[in-house]
Length: 156
Length: 370
Ligand SMILES: [Zn+2]
Ligand SMILES: [Zn+2]
Image (cartoon, rainbow over all chains, first blue to last red; front, side):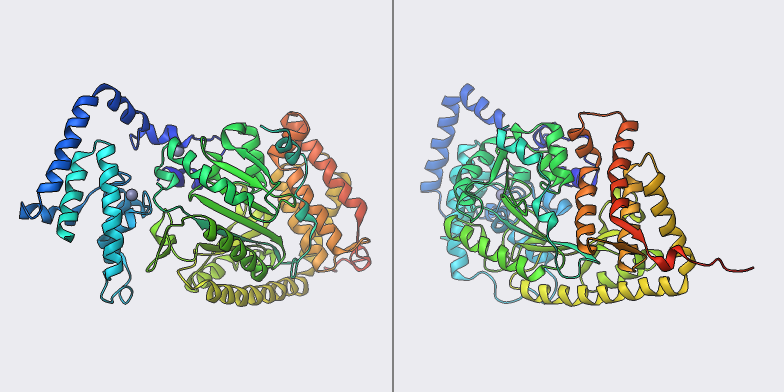
């Protein structure tokens, strides 16, 4: 997206990627630390609450399980599914696991048709889900963290 | 910027002096290898912090690759806009890396035939160049590098898709192949579009090498594969080698056809080019691209003779093309006016005239009678 503009255009004037990205509101690494400084108590309280819910909340709220089928953002890197649909790009290697259903839809017929999720794959996604959950909590993205929590519960 | 990097920019790439098979048509070959680290955000979606972490992990890996222990290195933040443009003109960075800053790095080996970029479109991208048709040896070389990298870093890999990349369509072996072709025969006989369509059917692409100057000036085109899907590199390598072989044959056929059927026209073009080398005083870069193309063609069809041999003229032309490119000329000659740039360029090209002579048959051509 931001890169192809430069690739296809002439590079007489160099656009700075980070600047571009910020201008488009794609990411803002500073706002996160900014928020942490200003809301440490609330931040911790919310994390505690989430962790508690995670420990005790197995098997509850069946409707929420369905939500995990339509993760709209990669919990690891916040990359929106919508951007993938528009550009064919992914935000990070874990996006491939998070958006795997989407990838299967796009795969050419005849490819990837075998019985898909092997046990190993589930292990992999479980491991990465846990990691993703930690990261989501760390970046104060509680909505995503909640979805991840449900996804993990579903695996149990 | 380190002193070593500025001295690097003052040297023309030594590999330009090499010669490879079929370099009358296949000017050069390039291979691209990409790898990404597991658990790290792709550069297009990254923060300065994550890029720096990726670079920290990958710099020791790059330094372990043969030829890269002492390689010239810079973080993009150390390079001025002018220096980035110079590297772009040399194809030693990609437009994507040229636009980047913190945590993005470039390494160039001594021969300047291999570059490694960190946090370009992917975490690591290595490009290897060679003169002539060197597809096979380039793939072998990239695989050796890949082995070293994969052994030392935690690489994002998926059984189903292969090595993961920022573009889902590019997952696979992480290798992509390119060839720069000189196709004046195809271009003069209006065969480029047809060729492009035929190549597309065979899952290969063709695009002008200097699109910014109009594709018909240089007659140089890039033939490239899509990034190879998992396990398909050998197939694509074989496929592309066969196609390149056929293309070279076809290009020679077309050149000979022009020479046989339109001798007068061709000798007129080449005679004018030669005259311009002797008596011209100013030359723009697009005109230079056109002139170099005509000289290469004339040499190949023996309209021109070179005392020192065809290959040494090709070497000279390759080096001149880079030296006289707009940014390089401005850099070496301390920002001359646009007019002076044209004069300097012409001066460089007029030295080619000393190395060549018109074929006797051509200088004694009899004019057709009405
Ligand atoms: Zn940008
Ligand atoms: Zn992601």
